[in-house]
Length: 153
Image 1 (tube, rainbow, N blue to C red):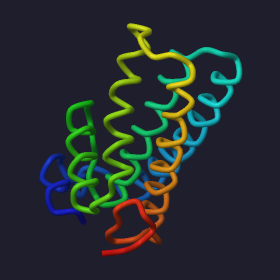
Image 2 (cartoon, rainbow, N blue to C red; image 1 turned 135 degrees about the vertical axis):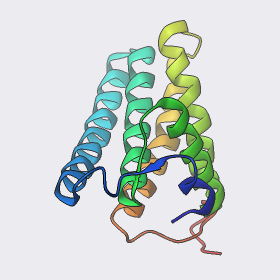
Image 3 (spheres, rainbow, N blue to C red; image 1 turned 30 degrees about the vertical axis):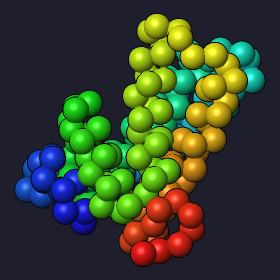
């Protein structure tokens, strides 16, 4: 379990049964993949704000899945961002750190509309890669440390 990431949220042990936690993990994973597909569809339709919001949803569900797989239940935006940052730092994963920064920006873009479609397309690629890594971590087959270059440290 990432050292700093663990300290930012409450443990679910004792508050959530194992079966309930497993069901929630499946739900987070399914939502993350669903939102990623939605983002692709919105990009195809030329809707940058909706695509960006779906990307943020995919990333946030992926972070919540990893947290829960480590025994941490994230209940609000702040704890999600803090956990995500700490996880990226603990794993030394530049892609995850970048995806989190992008995710917050495109989440705001939904309300303000300041990013163009081409930028959201580029953001999609970063978040897609970060989500792949998050889901791999959740399944327990991911690298323990990596900087985004495919090398472990």
